[in-house]
Length: 95
Image 1 (spheres, rainbow, N blue to C red):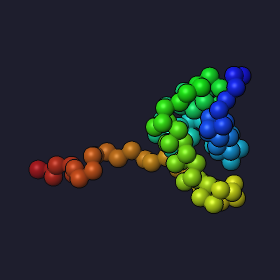
Image 2 (image 1 turned 45 degrees about the horizontal axis):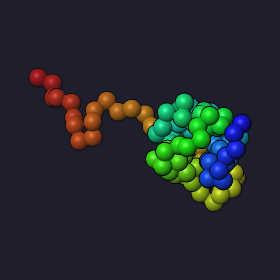
Image 3 (image 1 turned 90 degrees about the horizontal axis):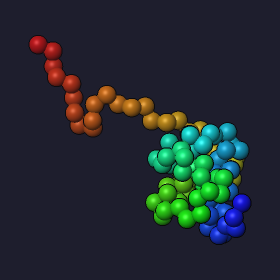
Image 4 (image 1 turned 90 degrees about the vertical axis):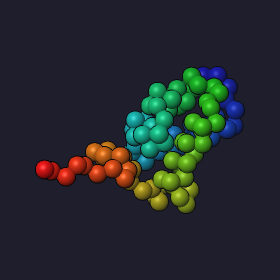
């Protein structure tokens, strides 16, 4: 594994902490709204320079699940259920 910067090491640690709390990489990716492959590449050390957007999304998701910074305060991640209609749109009334 190549040498990591301290910022990247921090992101890897966040991913591992979420995994140790019982989340899969797919759940982490869905919660952070990023591609699952991005989480895997960071966690395995393949990605050495992730984008700011990716790093910010992972940090935001980590803070949401560990608000006090402690694993005991984990809130269970439930992915949003897709809605049938766009916000503000309603189905047509039956004739």
